[in-house]
Length: 353
Image (cartoon, helix red, strand yellow):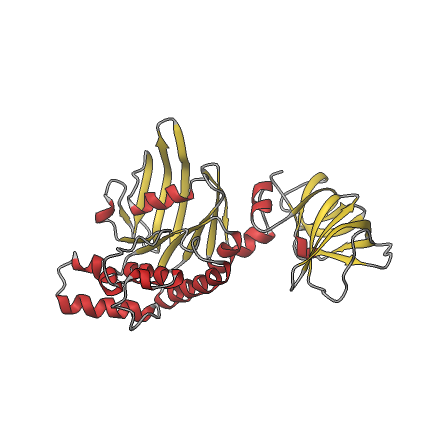
């Protein structure tokens, strides 16, 4: 086995009776990376996390952690720690006792356990909170206690199962930044499950997008956002307007594409001349009051003001387009006639469509 990989799945399937929760999963996670399993409810991401943890056992295939085959090993014999969605803190124990809990199962002295637990609380910014009960902490602080409890065990792999879903939006952003900073500072191999696309894009070195028990696409956040391999990924990672277009010609690595009368040069991504689907990100659409002969003519159906941007629904020959516009000084009213042009960034051909 290659020890540069902290986790490897080899053709892993998990079935519950006749239902396959995951099918033929093959992936490898490099040591020190944060990899997110992303997908809608029921896609198999949490089952995959539990298969790494040993909380579920595989039906077929093999799981390796740190170069060692752990396929048949129970959770207690795997070098992983898990942070649960519910935090799973013991309400009758102090914060320090919660963080110390896993260490007390080891052969460490009480002094060593206490020292490590205090170090863990320092790491997550909760020094001085050791004698409080979980009920005396905010949701964000409770989450940090759960992280500290996992960290002090110094696992080969740290697992997060929807860790921020119980927090409000502003706190989610702060805690996800804290988790990412801590992971990078300590060089921890981390597997992170979420259904929140923005969260995945913000924290990950790599993302594994899952759909209906299989991997739909794997890559960096940028690759997934700018080069989706199919309609599902294009639509799931950030919003996308999926429209019909035509490849006129292929020259080198590029295709000349006609999108609603506009000509664009896009990476051909292995496609040939003819009808294709194109993903257009909402931020890649420019709206102009003036009639622009190079643009597509359209009508504003809806304009929603959201403080730092305006969301438009626009009707045009391509259908209804969803547009995000940060140009706050030029608001278009419902019913306005506008001209649509496209940025070169954020427009991509979809190969498997």
